[in-house]
Image (cartoon, rainbow, N blue to C red; front, side, top):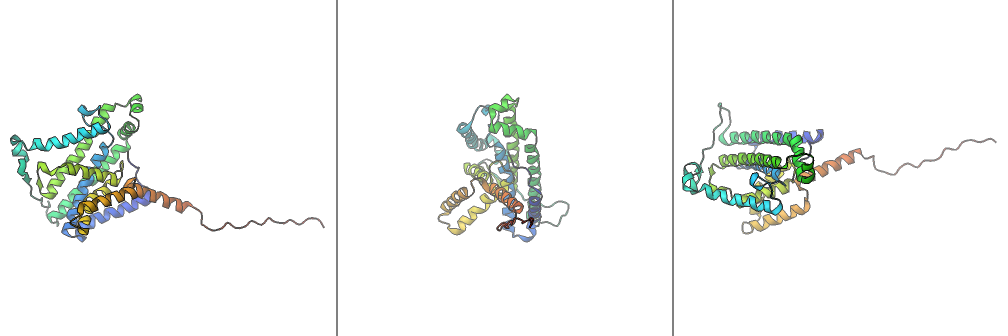
Length: 295
């Protein structure tokens, strides 16, 4: 389901990236801190969607596969926001008008403004959820759901409870996406039923593919893509933002067929082979030694 933890050299790079993430609120502008906070939120959601890739959801859909499963998922995405607009739920959901939220202040008199505190709070939650997801996928549960994804008939014949693990996978995925939705509402300071549209589902799917299907670390790459690339496309041309975004997406899919993390893994493997390879150059000519014979 996911690649194992990188070797020591790659962990050094990840440690440097983490240090940079910790320093970011002190060296970046307010808007850039907001964008980075959104990247952490989207990364959580992409991990949740990645956990669900290749499986059914919930008890009513345990027998659904392929495009039937996709249709059932989209049906829920269309139905739930409409139900939240129902007048009986307005006291909790705000109805069509939604709810405005206050940005939390830093506790314990920490020397952080509201944006910096929210950034660190989101980062801590993101790292914690990534740690839990990695442990889940590296254990017995991870092996079971990987077997269900690759060979469901063989997994069931080996005693894996396919229905149970599909339901558990959907539950964990819903947990991650639910946390991401809550964090997104706090970051944006507004939430409404129309905040979670079909386009958001498509953007998250794009993030999964760009980062790398079945990769936890690729979620950061996918999240950065769906947060930053629309601004890049808009800066190029405000009249054709969608077209430029689509061209960039097609180009990246052509260049990165296995996702961004897949490219990094291939580069790491190539560098490892290059270090182990002998020095280049023509091999020395071996001249046979002449032995002195009797005269």
